[in-house]
Image 1: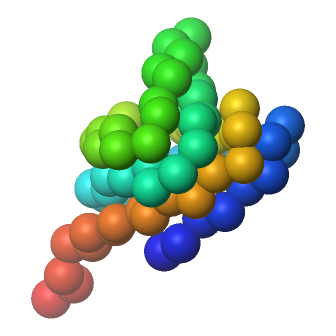
Image 2: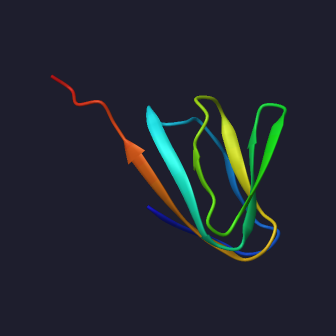
Length: 73
């Protein structure tokens, strides 16, 4: 999934999928999960924590979110 945010905007708080990672292609964001704040800049690649979180845009940014789900039998 492609995510584009403008400076000062945010992706609202939501629950994490089973497994996901975020690759920041341009700009700067902060990944907020619980009390933790993880600044990310262009080129950062991080695993999304398995808890409620949100993303804050420090600058205009563009990121790719890769999600893996467990197949259902």
